[in-house]
Every structure is written in structure tokens, then in C-alpha cells.
Length: 456
Image (tube, rainbow, N blue to C red; front, side):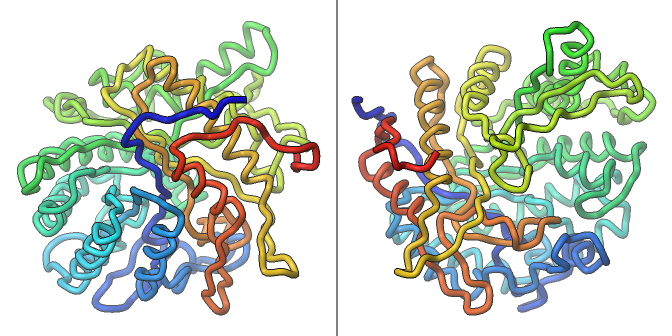
């Protein structure tokens, strides 16, 4: 089969998150975040761990940049720790925190790797949570000031900016189910938190565009999943559409249309947010690009005992890690073509895409994570298919560069292209890393899965 070629100047890289890799949780003036607090609560993290050290990226960033260069990456998406810059979330600036990211940006550029900066990847300063967190409207203004401070320091070199990573996870898992920090079960605050996240996005866009010395291209990253009915029954179809409204349309519509979906609002009216005049105009100011995080789909069945739906578990044969999710490559094509048809973003980046597999180093020092390679190939084929359909995708970021702290799952899931021995901090490039480095070098993918012994 012929190779599938990607567009010229396609961005190829990996994505990481400050809390998950940096460590140095209280060094050089950094303040505590809600995840520093949450991970210390009994039972909140499955293996009882935290990210105090994680991958020690704060001290080993130069080695990690060398690995990116070895893998031929030309872009790197990383987040900045808000409490490392502003230990109290506002007020006094912590100069050593800015200095760290200053060095990181210079190190990337010296290797020809373009930085894509995410300003918020879930590590709200604990002081701001104590003042009300995301349900408190004041947090949006503090976030905009934080964005201005970072842009003032780094905006002479950085042009790609992401305000938020996955506001759906922040609001739904942080304030509705309590599975993630800050661990609240607060239905009345859930969608107010989401609205204030969007408001802070709009305010931060203004700050970035007026402060950065180089023209700032600004976007937001959303976690999007196709939602399919378990059967063709009208009840299951209705259940799937309701859930799609909660996890997809509620987070797409305000950014592109300046409104929340009417059916979702009516369904959950009692817990919908309070909106002030002018909010939606700020929220829906045009973005330069949309970041799409895609992992899998949801399959929904009507449940008469719940207001929404229940998920149908994926068949065990299709679950890659302890039933965490189903492997479903076509969902990436489906989601991208739907976004293009319904929302018409000017540019799209795949900002996360990956899978955890039970990695281990073999006797000869190699790490043969063939199932990850299969996942990558299947998803990149679907991505190429979407680009051929006219979807304006300009880059792909694998989740993630390094094995890391995976939130409430601790250190057991390994998503990285690079294996990390957490005791020694030794890095070992996996076969998937070698494989994707060839894809990047060629800017093309061989869709042939290989000989019969290639693991399925």
C-alpha cells in the first residue's frame, strides 16, 4: 500500500502536563495546587501516590528536550503551573517559576521545537480554591491576569497559546462526581464552574493578544467523544443525544455560537449557570484554533432510573487497559468531520491521543509496546482520512511524551512514548517512540500493519 502523506509543515509532537511530570512540588517558591492537596487525601488516588516527584522534569528538562529531538519532534505542547508563577493565585509573582519556563522555551527553540503553551491543566492554586475556586467568578479575572504575566515574559518567543485543557473534566469530574481535584460533589456549582472557565478563556485571549510581543494564536482544548446509542431504539438514540449535549455540545456551542445548547439547558435547568450581560460575547470571541483531545467513544443505553443515561461497557477484547476504555479508531474521523461540518473552526490540532498499555522492559533492554503502535497507526490513518476530507488539521500531539502520574489512577497506567523508571528516573524510548519518529521524519505513515505476527 502507498504511504499516506501529511501536509507540509505539519506539527508533530507530544503533550505533557506540569503537575504530571514536573515534580519539585514545593521548590523555588512554588505554592500548593488543588492536586497537591487532593492527592494526599486517603483513597483519592488508586495507588496512594502523588506527584511530588513524578518524572522530575523540573530538574531533568534538558534531557527530556534531547529525547524530543531524538524522536524528530518539531513541536511540544506543555502546561505552565499556575501556582509556580503565582503561589497564591494572584498578587506577588514568583520569579524563579517564570525563569524555569523561560529556560524551557529557549531550550526548545534551540532544538527547532515549537512550544505550544497550555496555561491551565487542572492545577488551580489552592489559595484560589479556598476563596471559592472555579464556581467563584473572581477566579476568571485572576486567570486573565496570570495569562498576562506569562505572555509578558514569554510572548516575545511563543506564538501558540492554549487557555484551558478540557474544561469538561475540570467541571464535571472536579465539581460533580468529585473524582478529580478539588473533589467536590457540588451539582449547583458544576456548570457555574464551566461557565467561569469559559469566561476566563475569553478574558485570557484578550490578555494574550494585547500583551504578547509576537502575534498570539490562541485556542482552547476540548475533550470530545462520539456518543453512540447501544441499539437503534428511539430511547437509546435519545439517551445518546442527551449525553452528547452534556459532554460535547455544552462545551463546543459557547465557544463557537455564544450560547449553550437549548436542550441541555432545559434538561438541567435547575443547575445551569448564572450568566451576566456580555459574558457570551467574551466567551465566543473567535479562536485561532481548536485543540481536540480524542481517546475513545461512549456507547449509551436508556436507563429509566436516571435523568441521563448509563454507559455500556466495551467488550473485554476491545479494552486495552483494565477496561478503562474501548479502542475505537474511527471515532477520531467521525468527531473531526462532525466538528468541521457543525462548527467550522479555522484550524484544528489533535492535542492529545494515546493509550495506556502494560509496558515493561524486555531482557535486551527494549520495550516492545506493539499495541500502542497499532493504536497510533489506526488513529493516524483516520486522521489522514479526515484531512483528505478537508478538515483543517495542522498537527498531532501524542499523549504523552513520558510515563507519568495519571491523576486518580496514580502511576499504574503508562501512556508515554518513553518509559520512566520512577525509582531511578531513567528514561527508555519505547518501540512506539522509535516508530513515530520514523513517521515524523517521513511526514507520512505506512498504513500496512506489517507481517502476520504483528500483534493485534
